[in-house]
Amino acid sequence: MTTVLTRSGYAKPGTSLNFSTGQWRQLFRPEHSYQTAPCHGSCPAGEDPQAYLAHVQLGHYKKAWETIVDVNPIPAITGRVCPHPCEAVCNRKEYDSPLVIHAVERFLGDEAIKNNWAYPVKPVDPSAPEIAIVGAGPAGISAAYHLIKRGYRAIIFDEHPESGGTLRTALPPYRLPRSLLDAELKRVLSLDGITFNPQTRLGRDIDIHDLQEKYPAVFLGLGAQHSIEWSIDGVVPKDLHSGFELLKKWVDIGKVPTPKSVAIIGAGNTAVDMARVMKRAGVSEVHLISHKPIPKPGIPIEEAMPAIPREINEALEEGVIIHEYRGIRRLILRGERVVGVELVHMKKLMQASGRLKRVA
Ligand code: SF4
Image (cartoon, rainbow, N blue to C red; front, side, top):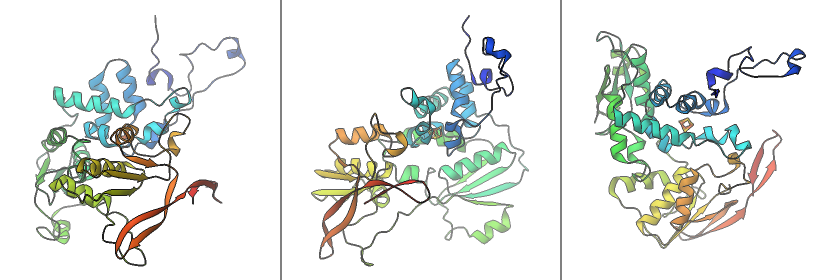
């Protein structure tokens, strides 16, 4: 008979019953030390991939999904947009390559939508205290979900007509299809105990002091709406743009400025999204300038560009030119316009703290 070693099989502290240890068992007393798995420790949503992968291994998909939504109510979304730091630390990479955790998460999220699996939450007492949440992005939605799980009611206010926050306003639909976004958010927002008030803007339609008076607690899930601002001696050149703002414009009206060539600085998902959007908009030369290398065999995953590798490969296939190990020494201006950039090679230097940092 084959023994499937699931999490429950090998992770019990103080036992080695599942293993045959031979004669040396008489000499040593092996003890399992129970520690947080690296994937679990690195997941910003607090998911435990080791636990849900064990259920998947046994074919228990619904149970696996329930394990995820115990902490994260939107796995079909995070399985698509999360840069999956869990995979960067997966021990399996020491053998061959990390487990594709985000793809399993996406599959389970999609299965839940397809089969209309019910969230494991109890009905909320209609007289339970109601907590105000400002912002219907991932933070606000998640806060509402966890509140009803703990027996509270939640009322969400958002300035937009629809929920989703940045997921809807700045993520290109090719990365997060809107039908999928709508389907998953609708399932959470229709849970008993959650009320959604769209087109209600903080500072215009509602006031923070009124909220504090009316509700026992207020959660502000306003999101990271602003990019780092760049200027040269206090002057912002006319054609220096924030990637986040351009992405919002593209998603909103389907248009962005289209010069002959564009240089994008960054190595994360926003930079790669921007590069692909620029290509789609018709810019013939799109350069992506990255301190870090393209992920490939031999490059430790934590040292490579943090954007999703599949997205980087698709950007390359679409004709984006990636300049690895490069930073910007200076922008070349003509009047107020940027006409070029001077690049510098970035190398790794050990810092006094013992950490490696890329410097010019
Ligand atoms: S893909 Fe993201 S959300 Fe999902 S387990 Fe990994 S780190 Fe957590």
